[in-house]
Image (cartoon, rainbow, N blue to C red; front, side, top):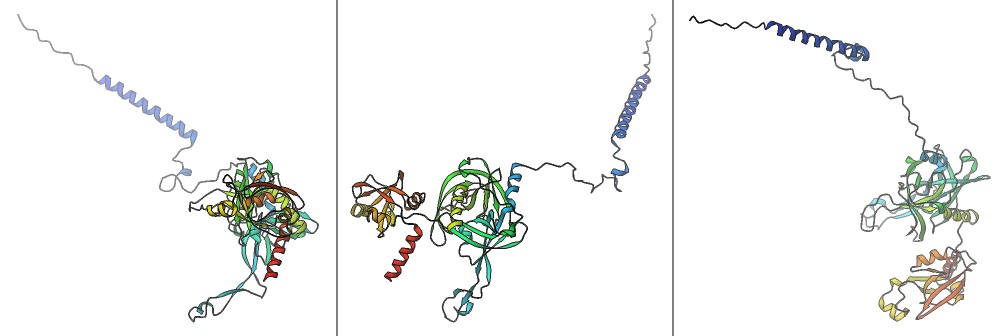
Length: 434
């Protein structure tokens, strides 16, 4: 039987490649058309306007947006109401001249140099602070600032917001509250609206607060910082350069207060002055740096003091006529041998001396009595006693609770003497004894 050869039939592969080529061509054409439409709609990146000579995107065509933001806020409006009335207070003092041979005195053994006031009358800028115009009446405009801003001044100037300087004079000072009042001629500030005082007793912890003034001096005059009321009724006690006690029942704020801000206003969101900036804590006794703890004198206290300064040039406060020592400062032996009070009494003020013909003397207080209360308020230090006493006026009567050895007693004391008269009498007695 003959073998039949079977030969496979050849496949026509060319049809597959043709179909693939047509599909590829169609895809490319579609992509080109899509890109073309996109470029027509959005502007070709290859257009001359968007290319520099090297063919890369152009540089130097950044523009400022024409969109504007409304920046008016409670802070800007409040600051704007009082800003014109804020001034820089410039303390002018006579130049200090040196006697002797200047820098050669030590070399030739002629002793140390001594500084003396220059009698030429030329005044130099000694320090700067802030203040605020609060009243214009007749020919006079009044400015409140801090006492420590104007201490030891031989002359005063105020720098207004427009950059002009005006001569000022001192109306009166009160070292105890660290306040002072100045006056200028009203026509010099005729275009300035005086600031108004708000009610500091209505302040709430956490509400916004604005501090205005001249931090670091008039170079930064009329600066504005903002923060909140951090706390109320902070007892801030220190001493001024003359050793006088400064006692402020202060507003605490974290609005930035720096040297030069002293005497400037602390303002609420209504643009009212609710405090006069006075001090800040920079460092603790253990050298820990502190930020955001500043203090202002409450406006209600400010108004009470400046009204008296305008009228009398000083604040008249009552005096008992005693010198004092804190009970806590005495040793155990002194307590047992001299004071001899009950062991249960651990806080109070010991009477160290009683001046004759004073309210304390007339009420029968004696040396070594221990005062524990003024009216219904406990007092544990001389500063606390003074603070309670100064809440009263000359002519008022107070109840004083004290221990004389083991016995607890009370006395009604009429405050018939003011502290300034007491100081004058004491000084006169010292002069007579010399």
